[in-house]
Length: 463
Image (cartoon, rainbow, N blue to C red):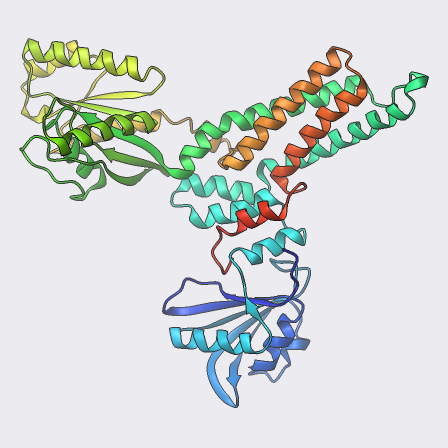
């Protein structure tokens, strides 16, 4: 993890394009680049100041490979904290390969996945949570996930955690010092200030843990299962929401045999819609498997849209719908369920009134014409607590951070309980060290090579 040789990788996506960027980082990065780069100004790259860009050519054995721009960043004022050179060349795959091989032959080696960011972490340019946010920022596909990643990359909650951890560490040192004077009955740590710190830490941990429920789904897209009997219009609704023919639509009942998923973005928030097989009794083996998957998807979904056919308004179907609604509530008591009455374009005013009276909390729509889709989208957005995002409050979206926060909260609770029960200081100190450990795991103040390897192996190679 602490290799100091000079690394190189393509920093732009693989394939041809207008330009490509190759990044070198390490103690010899500028010297190696200077050997192969001839500036149009005649200046030597090795003598150029940092944060400067130079036009010139990359040469191989007296042959010009390409006209490029070379950008110089000198340590420690670079992304990695080391000397860095970025070569912007034309995006031909041939040119990229030739320049890359040229520098590999000149003493560079290929960077491993995430190695540039790993070096930035090791050299103190960012903490571990900020480094992880770099990958999240690259992977962000909507406004919400982008906002969460950007906030975390700029410090987010890790700065506050690091500060409170430092205060807790100071108290731990004072309590340890008291143990050396245990026979003299002295206190170096101000208990009142210590309780106040525990209150602040406990409040921050609770807020961050509570935010994970929002942050995790926003990062991945909120899963929404579209369920109901066959032929009520589930696939038509999915197509209408996506504005494309994603699912097969047919008057034949049971057309959808497997779950179909796709995502749309509503006001910056991703929703992952899952069109499921129609629920009914069937002897068809394949359809039966699809129906079982429907129930599985409803279990894992965060929101359920349950559709019924509004064109069938006889009393028997009313009774059936109400029974289905009750069953759904019993199975998913804590899950938001949006009830949709589809095919309202086929109803007269009297029938619409009957449905509104029978199902006052349901939304009437026509998946075929698009009537009512805006109200459905508004209902979905209304289920998302966007206050944290709008107020730019810290939001946790990383599962590793969440687990560390929960363990730190438990340790802080043990510290308070021990203090209030007059537990000996040496035992309280154990719980404090446990809290310090888990807080340090978030920022990287406590880390292992295995942990770092696991995190950075998920990065793209050029980052």
